[in-house]
Length: 318
Image 1 (cartoon, rainbow, N blue to C red):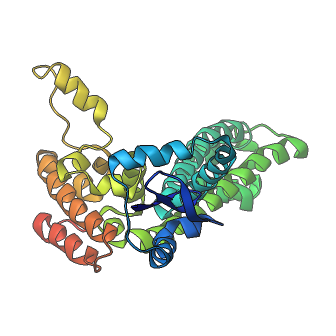
Image 2 (cartoon, rainbow, N blue to C red):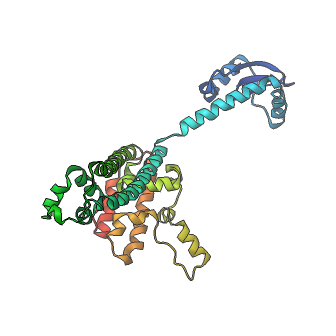
Image 3 (cartoon, rainbow, N blue to C red):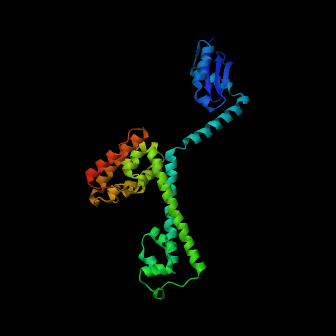
């Protein structure tokens, strides 16, 4: 009588020709399930003339597991496998996506609160607020210097200032917002450094060619490094410009196709002449496509060579 070996998530089993269980071993954990070949080999050594079931035999074997006593085991093992799969799905590219998303959110908050701080601080010291355009520098100076010190640097007498004479509690309220904004800048810097470290481990070639921020944004938009690898360079080129592409597809006469998406922020494109943007975007996307594939398949570091080719071709340093 023939014998069949069959494995599922709860164990490896041996059935006779009548699909009756004659031997088997239950798996204690997920690792045993992953290495089920070892268990199957031991059962094959114990039982001679054993084979894999045909499609017809498989139907008879599966009927055996319809017994309710196996339901709880299947449920628990499936739950364990699902938890394990979720745990293993968290990789460096997932952390890159979360980090760049956090940086973008911090940027939005900084821009919003910096505008509010400038309006508020202008009531107290309008001359300084209008003189310093950079928000980070403005916050740093406002925190480190008093109103009198700042006015002296501009050769303005305190009595000639248009700013209101606020009480200490009012000034403290303004500076408290400035302190929180300063902390936001420190937090952003910390995440930017962390992002560079992640990319150095995960996609050094891609980050070298694209730059850390653009590289992270492209990975985030694609959803993962693997999805980005599967994209042709023409798709990488317009990644992030889907709305413009759909407008073009709806009305090709009225709307031109987009030349670039996220990579528009890249210095190679920003520094090139407008009529060269399309050519620069194509060349950049081509090198990005090469770089991300080398990174995904754990190839050698060639990012510096790819970058040099772009620099030499367009005579633009970035």
